[in-house]
Figure 1 (cartoon, helix red, strand yellow):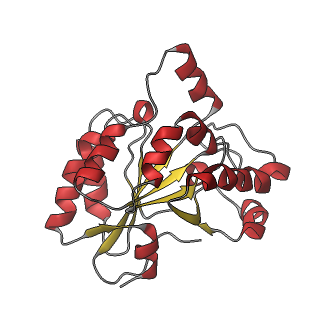
Figure 2: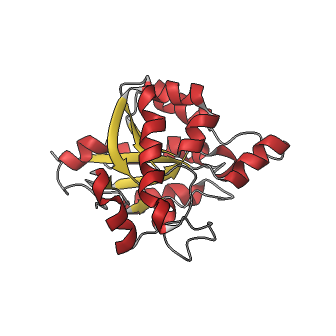
Amino acid sequence: MVDHGPRVGNRVALTFDADMTDGMLHSLRSGRVRSYANLRILDLLEREQVPATFFLTGKWVQRYPEVTRRIAGNPRFELANHTYGHLAFTGDCYDLPRLPASGMTEDVAKTFRVIEPYGGRQTRYFRFPGLCHDKAALDALAPLGLTVVDGDVVSGDPFAKAWQPLVRAVLDKARPGSIVIMHVTEANASMTDEALPHILAGLRERGLVPATLSEVLAGG
């Protein structure tokens, strides 16, 4: 389990979670929400050739197969696992419905199977919804041979009403080896694409360089 990489060099990992719950799917189908895939983030990362790691839920992948192919097709992007349906692995986790302990291992294994056919830079990285985990959850996932990734820089982008606080949250805490947590789920994190150009500029001013999570964890 890691919160950050070695505090050496000048690299930081930009990670983007792609949440998808049954409630979010219902909002899409009912027309209440337009999109949980923020393509402006991808446009910017691609245009500026910025590496990033995407933690994908299986249901998000199934809802957005073409966007997943786009992510997988970029050699600067890595794909990681964020559960199948963004259920909680502990009690009292941001009001998320709880996944039974008996289903934890298969939930994560299933998500790897959903992501695998897309190819690209596949990883064995995993992030718990809400970063909520305990010993029982960690024990359940141990047979899968994965690395649990939290993060030391939390942007606070879910349901943010302005982009400026996100920029401050990232730039105030980012340092060599940092793992920055953001979201690509447009309707639930609508300010992220506006904050991202300022975050990238601020990192450059501080001499910090975005890299894939694998590169940051390797150090150097």
